[in-house]
Image (cartoon, rainbow, N blue to C red; front, side, top):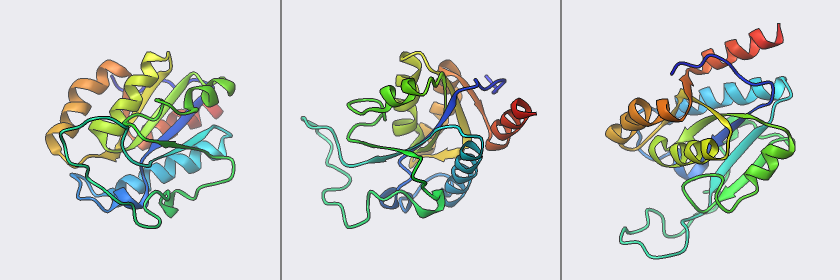
Length: 187
């Protein structure tokens, strides 16, 4: 469903736009994804709305038959990309799972600020973004996904999330759609 409204207390969640991941090959250039996410972050900050910057610091403990993509993290790997212009007022969440809510303070942080809706962007569409969106919906948040501010390493997975999964989780739109709604709300 196309984005139609944003709640008064909407937060932006930027998933895994960190130095160690943005250099991975993706179906859409990560530079454009970072640019769109940065535009949204600046817009949310200018309106006094929460910005959450999420990074990933590994995988959850437990058994897996898949070899880890990264076995050792070089210096700076987890750092949020500088293009996002991280501010002291931004909330940072470090996760070890696909989604940003599991075993983190994200839900408590959002609820303490009376947030009722989240706009989610980042990488990868079919893992970090989708897992965060699913969990946000399950926790009762209204979910919006900025489709031009996300990408994946796999085109089929990216397309499946956008076409089949996201319409069931919330509303979708572009960065400009979301900025326009924020502007109309302020007018």
